[in-house]
Image 1 (spheres, one colour):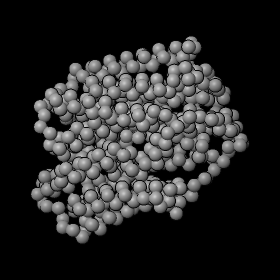
Image 2 (spheres, one colour; image 1 turned 90 degrees about the vertical axis):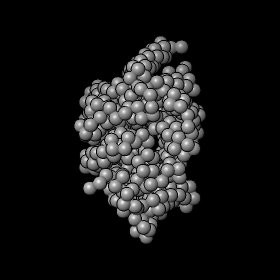
Image 3 (tube, helix red, strand yellow; image 1 turned 180 degrees about the horizontal axis):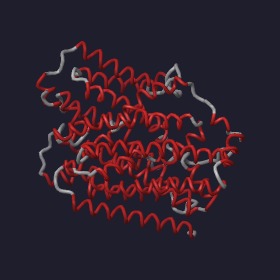
Length: 496
């Protein structure tokens, strides 16, 4: 085992000790009951909410994935991300977050489906469909690709001396342990450390790029005059992005399931506003600044794309070749922090679905509180085990499945919810019809009708037709069927 591998292993162990120590601290603060475990009884401070929202929003895609997208597909997605965060995501996150926060405080919600089932006046069928199918199908794979990126990159930096399987087991088990210990508090408190780690890694990335090139001018000139200069040109038609702005923005502004419950956990309105600020800081730095700098460095340094297991390895390979494996590994702990802060939040969210929505509310299990607390922790093991199995090999189709499904999947889930949050006329028939039609049409478009990207004949963003189908169906069915009972609407929104 090389010295570099030993140093990386020591860093990993130190990182594990820190997050498990935080988990133990969170465990001592966590009381009994599912609401305390899953949403910290709505007590997270503005400071904690800022970092947990920022860190959770930035996945491995945000930290290095978008740089690889810039290198592989061109700059357009980076410009797209940079444009819609300040104009759409930040204000919508605040608007939607305030509504979710108010309803969460009024009704003591724990899961996403708590709100939807209450709004529609339906329990079992809504919880099973919305909770299990509509959230599990993209999210379990999204946990898996966080594991894939973290494990493949760190294993690659050791030259395979620490195997991919070992890294996968290490990251999955460490994350499961601290989530099991303290639930939402563990996730949120570790996110403070991980959010700071991500920001420090951003600064270090910019510094290393600047140091290697002796400034940015030479790097941009080399990239713009090299064989991959096409990356700065338009490669997608403008009309591809118009529906993406319309349909992705509202979905990712507060209604991503594992971010949505942050508003249930917020202590006060200031915490909600800090979530919007966290999106702004994270979006500006990780989805706009970093991809332009690191993506341009990749264009200049790799005229021909090297062979990698996952595209995120482009970045780690570049920094490793410049400064060695250990400095690159230090930088890549920003990726680990980004990946874990996303994966642990999804893990906790999926565990709450299995326990609360499926066992308690659908199958009506009547177990003692202590037993339910134990079940909550066991559900974490089940979910992380499934995600780890899905990620057992980076060459399996998990990455393509997750990337294909996550953005349109979240959108067809979130847009009907957004409409029912603000339009009181929406009834059960309309909402369920919208959810089902969006989900089914997404699968048909992607896997049956147009299996080639972008899964429609018009070269629109791939989720466009399913989102339109879901929204139109919701509106038409709602208007053709009786309005929801007045008592239901008043019980959900409050009187007045």
